[in-house]
Length: 240
Image (cartoon, rainbow, N blue to C red; front, side, top):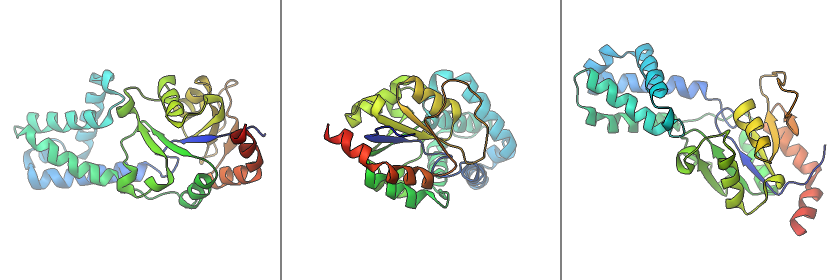
């Protein structure tokens, strides 16, 4: 398949790096922090109970689903308060969480492929998560990072895709959104009028008849190869 692309919006978690190891690290770091700074909270909310509390807080505040940092802080405040400790400690606990959250191990193909992709086209990070590309050290590959918290709505809402396109100055039909999540990334972007690329590292079958992704690869290197092979199409559209 060949079509013109003038820019790329790129998901982060489970597209550039796996999130599961980050989630495990976050839980371990928070538990260790609580054991040192709030033993009563650590006793009342060990890892499994803290995870369940987080899920309850998220469910109780659907209006904040676009702001994972706010939900995490609410969870920490709740845990500290219910343990009889000072909820003001939540800020320092969040700092420990956030440092752990931004320790990422990219997929083996990601960094080289990202550099190749960014050499072809402007790339914008588009994420529902709260990763910080500056802290991670990858911001140089991106024109900007647009998060759901900053925008005020999360994928798959069309508005966040359109906001990224407006910031790029490129019509949605000429922007390729790249991500791993079937609903949040592929279906959401397609319904917003963008072209779509599904990064399917797990070999899942595509579950929908329509919409279907325009491109379907098992890693980012394959996308970089596709861009290499179709670079004339991008040049033509950029010069139009």
